[in-house]
Length: 220
Image (cartoon, rainbow, N blue to C red; front, side, top):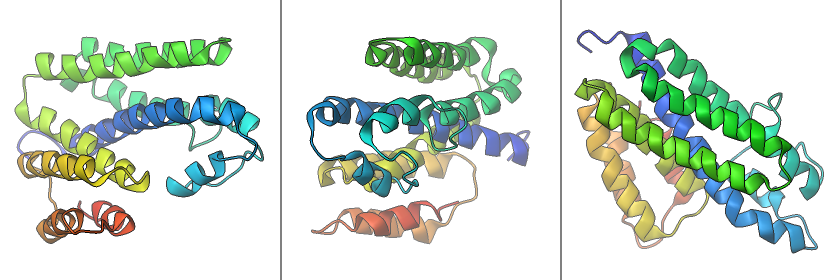
């Protein structure tokens, strides 16, 4: 790991995972929001099943309010964003104050969204700030290894979430091929057999989504 400690590497990795988790879940939430408003049955239960979180909501109205904004719920979007911030604040010296600031701005936007009559507008700002975070990280972080660890976490989380959400094969293939070199260049210890297995699974005629999730979670 060179001058990067094991603890620092772990925090960088989870910073990448949590920021990507927030980004992907908000995008998926956008897709389902309007559908849930008009539907007769509660499709949010299928989402809970797909991402493997307990249905503690009871109905779609509670889900639409609590899944994004309930900080007491460890599976909520804001909880995952807060975890990203907790890692980023400890890593301030490694990633820089400007990079950290975009995580802070994302949290401010989520807090505004909770109070807003049009929450999706403010949640779009969360997405914008996360995109800015990744962009400024590329521009401002000098250490290639630090950048690669963050991106390895980001790519692992994206493949995990996309597999759970049943993303179409060509998209998943693209993301797996983006993930592999990031992991290889990160300096993290990883299971090469698991990595090869994921590549094989995603290229099968019928994608084994749950098989990919299981292998992804065991890479590191």
